[in-house]
Amino acid sequence: MKKLFVFLFIFVTICTNEAQTSLDEINQTRCKHSLNGMIAFSSWTGANLIAGTVGVLTTKGATQHFFEMNLYFNAVNLGLAIPGLVGAIKAKRTGLSFEQSVKEVQKVKTVYLVNGVLDVTYITAGFLLREMSQNNSNDIQLKNRLAGYGNALIVQGGFLLLYDFIEFGVHAINGKRLDQHWDKISVRPYGVYGLGMSVQYNLSHMHSPSQAIPFSSF
Image 1 (cartoon, rainbow, N blue to C red):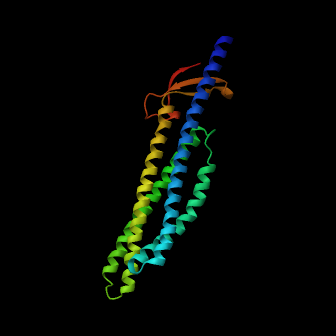
Image 2 (image 1 turned 135 degrees about the horizontal axis):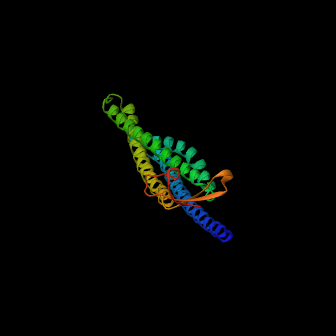
């Protein structure tokens, strides 16, 4: 009986260590994707701020207003990029539980989905402004401003939509690794004060850890 208990203790310890290692790898990958994404976003923001400033000072007409809106737009982006970049650097990469890991993945995916909706809104607003510019041919200054602002919103919204789509995709793919890991095996305590051990095996991706079908129990 004592040998059986020692065997079970070693087995559970190994499974737990392997599970945590796998979770840590998944969370490290998630943080790496987030950091790379924020670097790309910050780079885009910085490039647009520089180009926007130069464009406003060296161009005229609709082109000048195009760079003007890019400058305004990315000034706001800068306020999001800095804390986002800092947060991605400081994000916790190890020691998260399964539940915490799932929540982090879902939170990131939700952010990119919401951003995607906003991106479509920017693009739509851009086309509307450009259409409005065609109906204000009498006021050249207003026509140029509407056309420039509209084109800028289309470009900025288009980039962000592509960016958010890619980021959502890479995080979704990484998040699926949680299902693949926990579909293999999970070890849980049972009984009074959790003194017993239960080894459970999931038969398909349709089962969550709380719905695992017992493979054997001790």
